[in-house]
Image 1: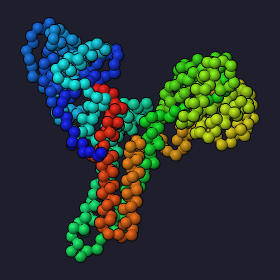
Image 2 (image 1 turned 180 degrees about the vertical axis):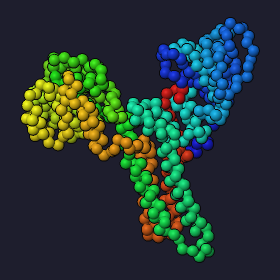
Image 3 (image 1 turned 45 degrees about the horizontal axis):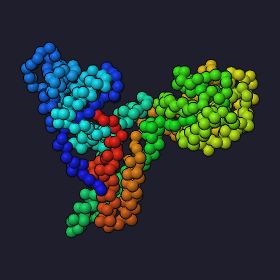
Image 4 (image 1 turned 135 degrees about the vertical axis):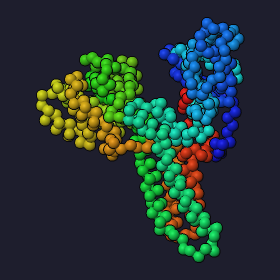
Length: 473
């Protein structure tokens, strides 16, 4: 069922802990709703805790107040706090909002939250503060979705793009297209409503307009894969036989000793996963157990897990040893990954004295693959390796300075439908069909673009989007 966001009622007050659970410098308890101020005034005592009955002061919006939160049942002080009241509509949710900053830790924040709930607030659902910001019109749905992208950003580049989308970059493009289609719809509807006007319909200017709109939507769709990479990262399996330097490669890319490195084959028996920034792209590196025949039950389990990781990896770093050259064992492993997006990494080049022969052998063995030559031990050619990883992941299709729109799968599905409507409009204009028939796909395209912004969307989709958030955001 498609619903209008204005149908939602927001007449209660919600509360939640807005900072991660656990020990920390501070913890923030957030309230939003009509009773936020009243609840805060009942629980907050201004100034020093030694003053038994401090004078009640009116809380002024957007001022910071020092004081204490009191347990109303026992009149005991729960914690020393700073409190901020933000009067609607100048708040995150466009409702009255109160934020209480207390000492970090599970107990202080939990006790303050319990006190707030006893005074009539209810515990917020995941993402409910951002959902209220959307429903109250402070942000549209694409901006709400970008909040989670900002929170989950793994690199400076993904953070930058998510921030731009949060500020309305993508939304403004969609609104611009909607405005142009609305003007076009108005023109053809006017011709339908006033047929007595003896004027010819202008088709040609709108053909040019539709071509421009189609190009813009196609641009959005073409950046989906890059946006997905920046949002979620690339699952990258480091594959090879034992003792070729897989763990050393992980450590040198992370610039820390994350994996145990020894000369004993089969040291890695489980997978190790870490995120590394490669020229702004987040790669989820997976160091895997070396693939070989093994009688060890534990090592065999690790090898089985490695094969599963290969199956689901987006990208593979296939490591071979320059010291030994390419063996039959290497080629058996390569057969497992040759059809995946991958980069061959020739490690231990410091142990090979005939580099020209090595390069010829590698080019012969892997004619269709990009090949990087490094020494993880001596940290040689590591920057070149990082560049080659970046280029191999993106297949050299994207200039690094290009800024993709972070469209997600929801946007992609809607925009694909919109593009079909745009093609129908274009066909109608070229064939100069009746205005009534042209108005149908224009109306459909406008409805689809409204779904992108969240003007009309299903409750299930909204719940699914905001369920990804943490409580308190």
